[in-house]
Image (cartoon, rainbow, N blue to C red; front, side, top):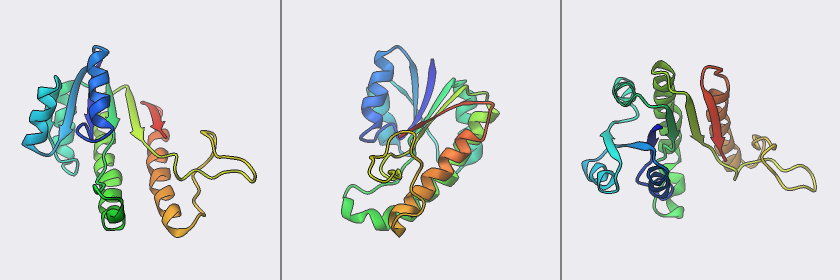
Length: 171
């Protein structure tokens, strides 16, 4: 299967790319730098330097690849947890706007499966129970948690509002 992976050089992306290659998939990692592209190629994947905010370039990359699946792990997170507040707006913009470009390009190019990075951190637990996969996101939590829950809710709504592609939210 031909798989297009964003966030391919991150903490999750590197092991994911390695496992996809090990399983025999053809992998193209999307990155914004020449150095990260070379890193992907050294590991056995192909690389495309594409800015997620450039809708035309994203669609061209998917069309060129003839991708069957897209794994959307677009993030803009800091190396230090203490810097999260400074990165939050940029991360949300990348996930919503850049991810929107990626999702629309996947639809336009006939991608069959779209795996969306979501989060299990912001699930709403039922009274006296722990949250599980059937739990919704906690949109009424403390302001910080609710803001993140709304972002992931928006991503999941976009994914599951379309019947022409198989969607999976990775919590």
